[in-house]
Image (cartoon, rainbow, N blue to C red; front, side, top):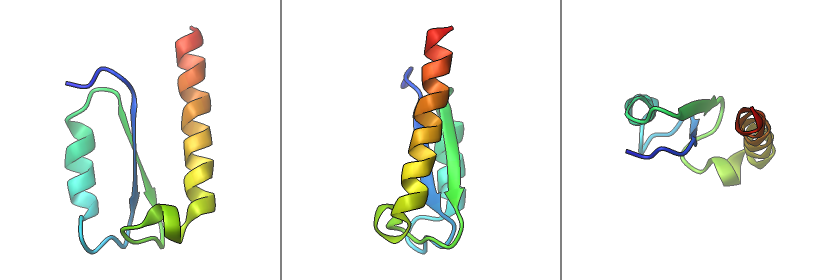
Length: 69
């Protein structure tokens, strides 16, 4: 088990590793969040870098608020 928060970012057009795989993987971790990026394939960081950065910032901000509580 991984006790730390985990962010999964997945492209909805990933032909190699499907969104269903991401959903199953995220469900196995108690502190996981899954964000699906529409219009992206397997390489979200290359295909949709602005969206990835926005999701990462949102997640880090939210996790920072949780940690501060």
